[in-house]
Length: 373
Ligand SMILES: CNc1nc2c(CCNCC3CCCCC3)c3nc(N)[nH]c(=O)c3cc2[nH]1
Image (cartoon, rainbow, N blue to C red):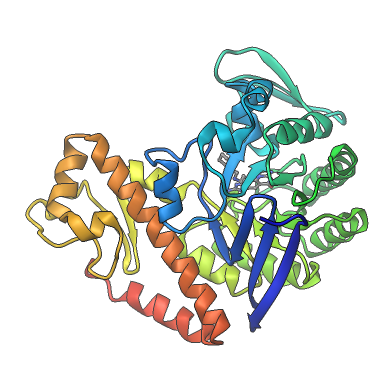
């Protein structure tokens, strides 16, 4: 436990960074992958299993939890850590992105967003103030600013409008934030794939001052090349003494490329969602367990993996569980995928410490080109 929120930069290898974030509920080694616990649970996983994969922080979500069961209810029950039995750090997103992707109707004004719940059709408002308050009620260690993430591709004028609005909302979010030892708030850089807009956004956020800075507005359909080129000119102008969090990313090769470009933290639904759609991620690429080629295969998913799924179960068994839609299939594949993601991050942390990150990247891609999985 710590009483002050801080980021230690422990080492670098090129633009790749090895660090540690200290929060009220514990420390997070970076580069870090944060599993997503949308409705106060990482689907198909017990919290102790999530901890066993090596995850040191989880994501929660303002949008989902304000609708059901309600932030007041969770606050009265002792906060999200107690509610979901996870005593390590929690980062909550501010809800704006989920409103745009999930809510039935929504209207953006200077004040905030009005939307209809995708659950019961009732109308709700989210503003920088209410989002920040909800995240406090959830007792999130890391609170995200309320922002607007435009879908790409979009005209530069639209991207600029969304960025300027998000910067005004960032100031309101900061003013609504309750400063407590060990708790931090991250600003979210916007600006699409436009160099000048990204630089202006970083400048405006650092002027306000946050405990960390996220790179938002990416992984929204722009593709990996444009995402990487945007990182190439965005991370160098971001503070070096604060964590950098790339939101919603990504596939294993996205993570490796983004760490190489100076990113410290990631979240993505992919490993857990794929676990439920019978897709397994391995160091040699992804495996679809619905494919009948696995029917008689006695081998584990990945001979080199030490997770409970690879230690004790064959592909034939995983194929059987998938075909029969057995719950154990969801559990084992989710566990494997989250374990693999944590192994990947641990491998990158070690490579940066040993200054062998370039070799790590070469080996990572070589294994995936060998195929035969
Ligand atoms: C997938 N691509 C992507 N995600 C983005 C997200 C969401 C990140 N994941 C949050 C979890 C999602 C599941 C429920 C729990 C929270 C973004 N969020 C914000 N606030 N701003 C973005 O620009 C922003 C941009 C994003 N791009």
